[in-house]
Image (cartoon, rainbow, N blue to C red; front, side):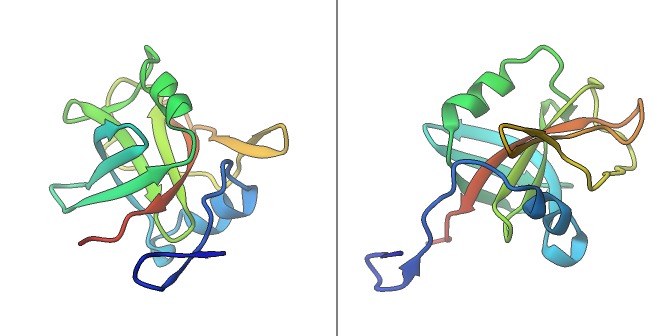
Length: 143
């Protein structure tokens, strides 16, 4: 564990998502929220909480993989921006894929598709729901 300039200990950013982060992290009690990915600059992603909430900033462990996912033809959009599901406390960002528009009511299954021992996707609950491509993130404190 390293320390920030303020002297506060910081956790290293994991590069991949663990299934436990998905199963525990995407609940309202865990602080998860839906939103819109409104920016990706280098390894910094900005997500606006839906609807019309504040913007939260995250450091993305594998920004090139996130950029590749955002280039997919089947990105789900909310008001024109990629639909996101975020668990800041568990360090997970999900980008919606599947239907072109975000559903009016979101249903998420707490199952993850694993690849190489890591959680890479939350499959869609049914045909009108998006799947979520998963990325490890760390919340950037507001200054």
